[in-house]
Image 1 (cartoon, one colour):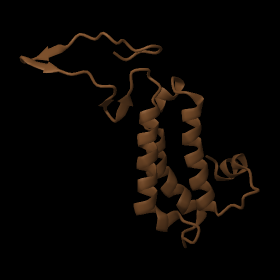
Image 2 (image 1 turned 90 degrees about the horizontal axis):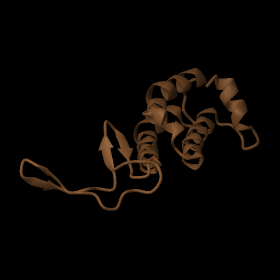
Image 3 (image 1 turned 30 degrees about the horizontal axis):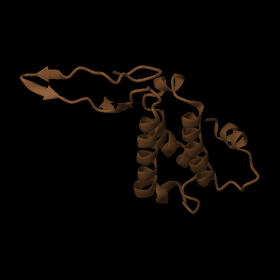
Image 4 (image 1 turned 45 degrees about the vertical axis):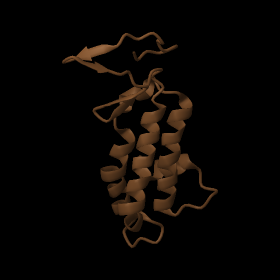
Length: 133
């Protein structure tokens, strides 16, 4: 079963239409990956991989450093295509560890730096404030 703390080790087998069902270490339900300790590490890792795949395949030429699009159009593409991937099932973030949440913030900071072509000495909070995110 899924719960905070230590997972149960002695789970009874379930039968569904005379077929035994096995217990797994995680389950995907409505795009949310649940693990036994409810850390949501696998869910955030899955979203990270999905985010960077979308960036590499579709978005790279549209919001990259050398893109001819204006910054307003880049921000609009970010809000419409990439942000929903990052924020899907964001209600679970109250239970997730801060280290896992930091991964999501790092992804957002990286793509915003690429979009704005910001130098290394510009702080992330300044970029967020200027883009009104």
